[in-house]
Image (cartoon, rainbow, N blue to C red):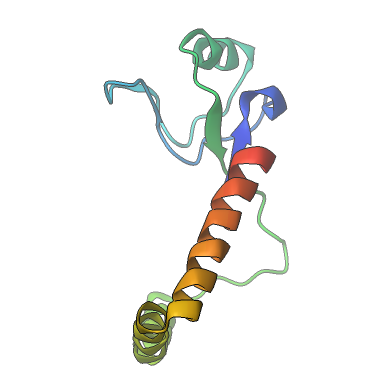
Length: 111
């Protein structure tokens, strides 16, 4: 899934997340295939970005639930160690913050 500006939305794209009003009310549900009517509805609510499903690679294989859990179990200790290290080392913390800010900036400007 990826976030796209409404300027880049075209009919046929599929919503990956619900589209919500500011008050949390659902305007359109995830899984809906967009057409001109729905696109105009989103624009009328002054929503600037929506989350769209990406086409899956045909060669991509799905990972089973068991495999996912095994990977999580194997990766979790390393992830925890790296996170602790980043939070205790001044320079690593600054680097981590810079990477996160850069990612947010890129998604905002390229979405």
